[in-house]
Length: 141
Image 1 (tube, one colour):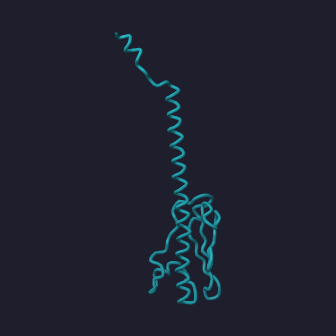
Image 2 (cartoon, helix red, strand yellow):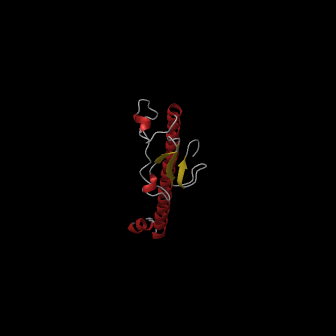
Image 3 (tube, rainbow, N blue to C red):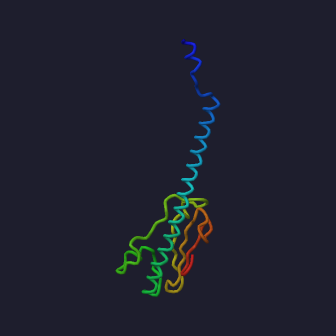
């Protein structure tokens, strides 16, 4: 009677357990990579949106004053507010971007501040923009 009980007992083999552990590990790796990739893409989208927002505020400022502000903070601190707060680049640089070029760098130029460049870095291609350091100038990125 006790012999029959032992014969009907079943268990997983070592190979079956290793296959299950391998599949779980593979699924976990794919999921982590996918989440990290989507986070990096969302940071790049934020960068492009920030630059577009800053450019629109710069053009409004220019239309009223016939020049661009000396610094970006003038867009939100003057009597006419063109931008509630000046956006900052996401903290984590992506792709080949470094901590140094991960910031938005605004440089005004030209006679009477009639031109500017706004530099920013993208970790990956985003729309028509390529990965790496890009510049926005009046009327285009």
